[in-house]
Image (tube, rainbow, N blue to C red; front, side, top):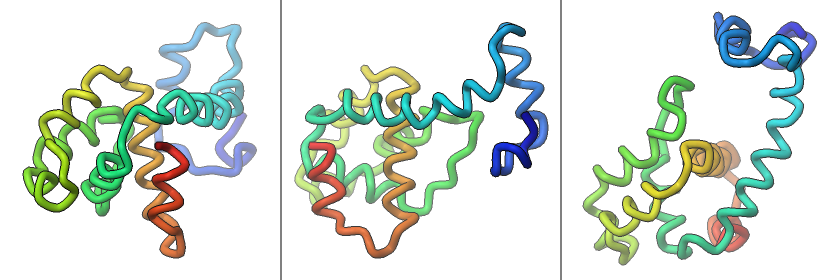
Amino acid sequence: MSREQLGMRAAPGASQRLREVLPRRIPRGYVVEAWPTLYRRTLAGLRGQFTAAELSAMLDVSNGTYLTAGLAGQHLPAEIADFPEAREKWGIDPAALASKIAVLTPFEICTLELWCQSYWDDPERNVGEYVAALT
């Protein structure tokens, strides 16, 4: 399945990287088609694990973060660890939040990173409603 058929832009070499990790009998299109379901299920599994203040802090630190595929699941832990203002601004302990994030799988962290980026992609979004859906 080509990038044009998928209706998206893939980074150069993405198809080759998929071939390197997927058995030949699994079509690459399956990965792309399964992604929305996996994302929604993972978010549902994360619901209730973080307070509204913790999720708001995650949104805050992700503002302006440029996600790169090679660091998927590593952006958020690094940003939280480097956010000492979270205690004063959001009333949370950044070290405690970092510990909560550290026990998640890389896929769960990546899903949170994408959830955060999705918030910033829509300037009309209501932060309270957005965060409430995951608390």
